[in-house]
Structures are given as structure tokens and as C-alpha cells.
Length: 204
Image: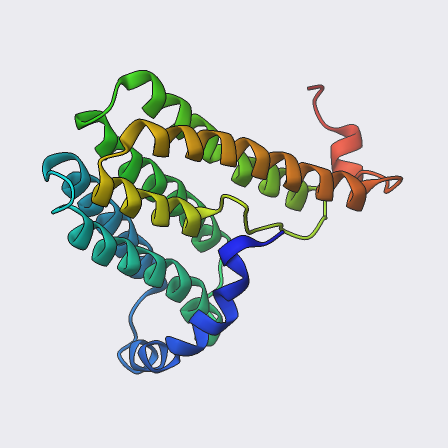
């Protein structure tokens, strides 16, 4: 159940020319990560400060750019041999900051409770994926409520003004997504011994 994440290879092909231009100009992957965060922050500001449906266009454009940068930073790092552990950490932090920046825009137009619930729930799928990857399981991505779906719903909210229903859908969908990923990780790790470092590390 990959949701819109299944379109990632197709989308990456569409960005091949842009990626080649970035390689020629020696642009840092980290720069793209931060550009994605800034685009997300701009989208959140537009959603919160502009009335529906006038917020829809800037939110859609900025979130399309945010997704493009999220695709390009890792691809650029691989193309230029600049994959580092620090870059991987920054990539994860950038994704989380971008998600929270968009959801923060809802604070202008919706009660704090639904915004906080959606923000907390939206982080759960990534924590599950990272926990699984830390034990040697393949990193799990995709939906039914991945970052692409969250961006699409933000555009729906900006166009319709259905802020609380969209937040509720993000929260519920994110919890379901975390459960789907956890089930996959659990199956992958069934009967697999933990790494020695985990077995001898500090108690949890």
C-alpha cells in the first residue's frame, strides 16, 4: 500500500534534467534540503494568512517545490557521491521540519487541539520506518498517508477551507500508515536476531 509514493520513480524521471543541471553547478544536496523546508514554511504561511480559495495556488506551487526538493536532494547526493551520514540525518530532520511547518499554518485557521494531534500523528510513520531501518529492515515509505498525501490535503484545505476535517484525516491516516508500516517491519524482523550492539546496549 504505497499510495502516491508509487509515483516517485516517474516523478524522478521528470526531474532528471533539473538534477543534471544541479550537478553541473555543484549545488549542495543540503541546500536543496533547506530549500524544501523554506518552501514548506511559505506554504504554511500562505495557508494560514490567505483566505480560501485564494490560498490554494500559492500553497500548491510551494508544496510542489517542496516535494521536488525532497526528491532532488537525495538523488543529487547519490549522483555526486556525496551521501554522508550527516546528510542522511539532515534529510530526515528537513522532512520533519517541512511537515511541521505546513501544519503550523493551520494554527491561524483551526483550534490548537486538532493541529497538535495532526502534527504528532504525522511524525509516527517516519519514526516507525526509522526504527525498522535501525534494526536492519528495509526502510518503508509510502501511504496511505505519506508526505505526498499530506501535501495534497493541505492544498485541499487551502482551496476549500475545510481545515479541521483535513487535520482529522491527516491524523487518522497517519496513524493507519504507521500501523501498516509497523506490520511490515514486524513481519520482516520476525525471528531475526537483533544486532549484537542492541543486545549488549543500555537497557530500555
